[in-house]
Image (cartoon, rainbow, N blue to C red; front, side):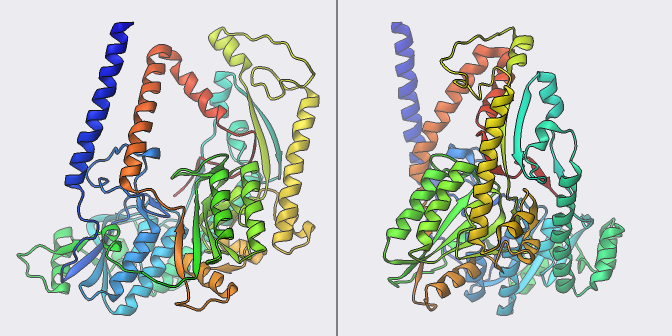
Length: 588
């Protein structure tokens, strides 16, 4: 025992010392908070990291790949990228923008906001050049606005349409002898399908075909306009896969020039007046955004609250909306007399129905006091739509994914897995017939199934009634477009689920108008307030060591049984009654 205590104490001391050393090194390595911008600088957008709503404060992200942060997330913030582009248009030191692209990790609504910002930048008469060895569909969507689009002579432009792919777990669950118990409302509510089917249902195929075509039609319309190509011809190029190599891309005017990277650098130097033998001055969007002053002293404020990730109970994280945390943020701005309007920026596939309703309640109370406007990003579906539907106005892009007004309940019966795979059996006593309803170690009775289905039906009725009220729509009309069906933003506007097209900027303008505020009479307050680097670092080390300790111990103790534990752990985190889209959807 004494030896164990000595070892534990030594380990703790080592961790503390390592943390202090790391923080000391970080202080030396972290660059100045506000970078210096030299003359003849080019703003470089690579967009090769995941694009999130806001950048997480991590000055070491360029130095290390696996930083000890909660959620372990890295990426670039859409807010900072747009701020950088806007600032570059006015900055005489920034001579142009270079889009160094290949693939992008973002939804089409996020790409739309970047693309719109680049189009606005062109009014400054500064250049935009784009280059890639290979353009993905998303990367090309951004590049299509450039003055010059370069492609590696051996490269390729992916220009063949969109596809959606869903992972199905039915076979795996059958092999593990785990039986899913499903309760749902809505013909199109497909989030449960991966657990009970091995392919898409016809209803699910119908809705995905519809909204994917809507998104891609909008894509083609914008590319045709930017490249000055007839829409019918551009559609033919895509449908018939006419672009199969770099020469095809040039022939069909998708790119303006085939060139190697060094040749593109030469052209960039000429464009900014940098001698060939000197290095090109460049800066990235996140660093440059720190130099852009958007300071206002106005007393009136418009609060922009970011709601990103799946919706769950409890506290929010960088990648999860906690019902408690978001409700508290909305409550605070409602009680703040200097906040005249609120914009709820949503990027969420939904999640817990209860947490969504808790957030909805705070939105409804705020609406009685001051305007609250929803701004939908890439996805605001199911629970993501739930928290938006009571807002004064709802704005989305044509290529936002939304709707999915439906509910499901999901339970997993693991009795046979434990019995047949592991030799573990259960027995029980109870004080009433329903004392252990929902127990994963036995089958549901018919009466229990009836009770749970009734509960799911009640949640659906609440969802549709509140949606109808929020959208000022007859209940039957709302139900006709509900049933769990997913819509593109373009489709959603035609059926009344959203009010206007637009991004965050347009939502802020609508909120200001609703609050009778003129431009210059207000300043923006972005919430939740982000923790600074050292606060995250401290929490991150704590989280990192806790996780590594627990996981390594379990792997060592459970051995070959550890994968079963992991699957069960993941299953247990799924809340019984959900309002969400499939979490394993892949669009490319």
